[in-house]
Image 1 (cartoon, helix red, strand yellow):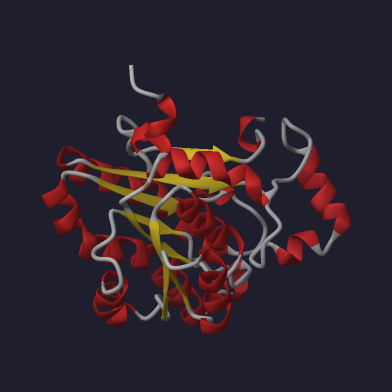
Image 2 (cartoon, helix red, strand yellow; image 1 turned 90 degrees about the horizontal axis):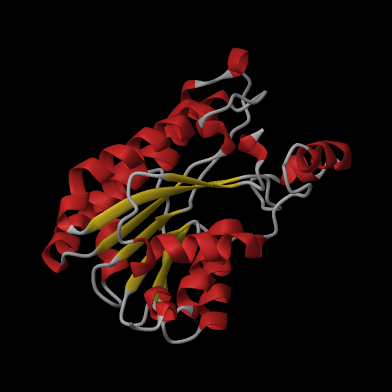
Length: 253
């Protein structure tokens, strides 16, 4: 029997992580690089990406781009593939929550939310799938949410996009798993990131969220490391089409 630890080794793999300039996306980029992958980080903020790449070293590259611009995704995919080749792993962590309540949803807010949270994962993945098929190996990890299955006040567009991500993940799995490509999603609970800044800015609200979990606390960024590495590695070779909730048991209640 080989060493089970080797299942999590990403040496020789190339990963693309969107939303790599901050929060859970940046954490994902750090984890995959630490596991041996060459990582291309994608985000709009070039300065934050450059800081991450400098800290990561020679096996990191960056692409400063706005994935909400659907007509640019084909070109962005080419830029991502330039440093190390077409990725074996793609983690779709980029996201936006306009926090527009139902009565105030705008066409602009709806469109940017759907483009970044839903359209970017399918069209960017689609650009990499032919090479993944040729290798008979690929890992697609989408970012779901508590709102994939539950409604929260405010952020109607965000909730709709994340519910759709759940089905997108299953549809990707149905289409591509026979070619060695697994597609899964991670559903974070409440973690202290820029996206959840308004939540953690209210101590009482943050405390209520912590109390609503089975564990009794909100998430720490390190809580994402193991689940993410699992879904990006050989350890999850027979897992596809699943939404793995990393929420301290919030959705178990």
